[in-house]
Length: 130
Image 1: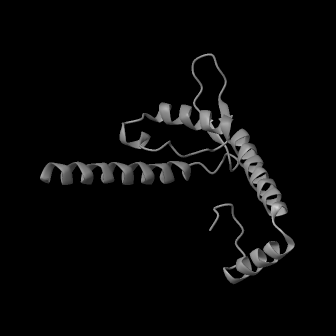
Image 2: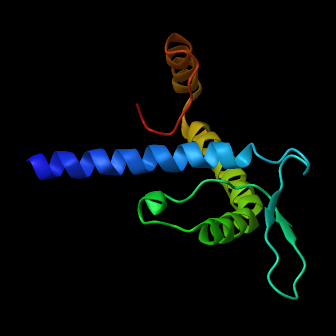
């Protein structure tokens, strides 16, 4: 039991440290435009700038990721950010379309009752069936 508590305390300390370091590291250089992350240049290669997707995936901060690994991960996540956002928007559009088609199946009386129920519950319209 004591070992479990100790391991949990260490994990929380590591998470807190990685969060604090992430915030302080992001606030150090005001000379670059907001929304960019500089990756140090390797020999013979120019410096690269990436969009800031400055969060490590879940639990990555607990495995001792180096600064270089963090920068590489930020760059990878930055490359996918725009595509993921577009897909999430497309999913929302599909959910609205699905709900609209489901509502079209209802009779006029059912649609009216559904609208009354939604109004009574704060106007929420979802596809959960509740």
